[in-house]
Length: 391
Picture 1: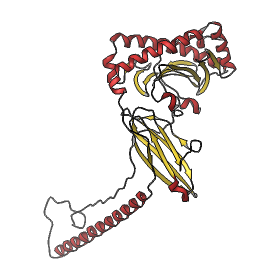
Picture 2: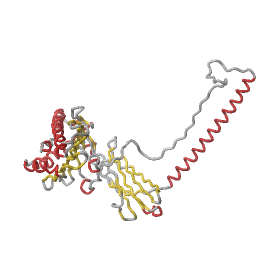
Picture 3: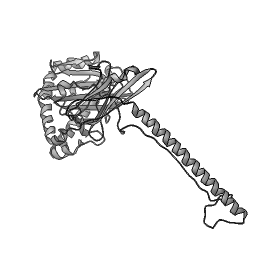
Picture 4: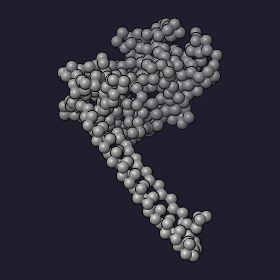
């Protein structure tokens, strides 16, 4: 499977089951020429075959006789506001780093002895030159085209909806700051104590896409309950005129308790009224039975000659904002000073292998944290044949 992203938004997709590169957004569907889809399909078919051979080779290098295995490629470039280009390429096997390309120094970096074999071969074959050309020229050229196709959609700015919450656990106050529904994905969410920003003490979630093309993220910190009023959440986003400060308002929790209590009492009163009414009705029905009264034909009559009545009373309470997303971690929040005014295009390619037989179709993220967190996307013309050679 290969998925293309621009600024974190998936816009193209290829997998072996469909066997065709397809659009995921209206702007790429309207903007790209018909031959674009055929060219991308051919590129992905070649990459799929090479990746299958690479999986077989890596099983031999790691002395694996079978089982389920994955290989991933992450390739992408950033266009920064000053016109400079930043690019990267990484390969992973079974959720672990395998080999990466250092664009600054123009060389490959192997993660272990098995990857060192590939690194030496690529060095002999001068593969690095092709990688540099792709990351510095080919990738940015495609990125400019994609931005042109989706300029109106990609340049929109939607500010975040921010919510701060808190709860006490074992004498510790846990404060959480959630930002929902923002675009673009460039955002800074920080916890402050007084005038100090607590970066090292803050636990952060990744910037995760929502199904509507926006993003969400969160930041959490532990504090002493008696110091609650000293903590503030600071949020900075291109869609906001200026950074804003948010504080936890614990009184909202007290209001919810009152609402719940009143609602429960109301439900109990309603239930009592229904039961009293049912008892009175039953008493009157019994008197009519003793005086020779028979219910009319066609009624739903029970074994005691009483029309059966069912009553269901329910009271529900819900607190919180937003649902329908998965809060997985996709990597560290990017360097805001570098990426804030830039445009990012990444690419992720994944393939699975079961019992030694290569097959395309899954973007296996693996179990290791590093690869489970990868941002992903479109990969154009990337030659990985060197990995597929035995040895």
